[in-house]
Length: 308
Image (cartoon, rainbow, N blue to C red):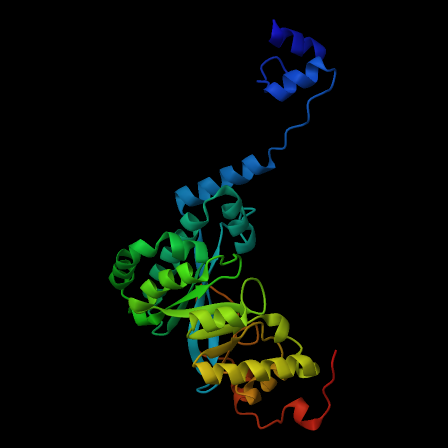
């Protein structure tokens, strides 16, 4: 009788639709129930399909070492299915975070990246993006993880755990202890995007990473901004004192490249060096090679830079 009464009171509801308590209450009150938003359900359905079919694939972006003029490493990045709304990593990982599947997705991507990198036989460092949450949740599986990497044909010393920037580390001591299990197994550690998200000088001091990536905000336009120039100069001084190697992210112009080179920044990553591709760049371009040998003085040496 209740179902029938509801259907008569709210004629737009189909006879076969299942009503929740809120719908029933709204119907008796003479209020039409709120339209249901299926966006989140479709997102979860798509994410589940991707996880079950493992339909993600890796791409690799080169990292240049200024000291040698050669490719130091590759960052292993991930893409969802090309026809999916979750093709971009941001949408894919945001959906996994909302659904509570972040660690499952993170480990799937890590396995895909490691297998493909080993198959390509690049003989370089591999930067493997791992969230702080994942580090904490898989810390007891370090031996199994190292065995998987070795079975794929990589040396553990080739792999750098790059701590991604999307989570706050609430207990630094617990996280540091978990990370030490990976370092003890031979992994190197990189801190991503210094100056953005959870990163800070304190975290740099606490974790003592092998590599520190500088957020692109402080890199792009450094050739025209004295504040960014002095910020990077200070970071380079700190890096020299604590044994970390800096990586400037988002390098896209020759002018910024030359400033970074002459500042003594160790490494560079960005579109000027090479984009992320399925088949990694093996040799740097003639343009970048020419910039490496260029004797041009940095703009700041001429006193032409100003705060933008």
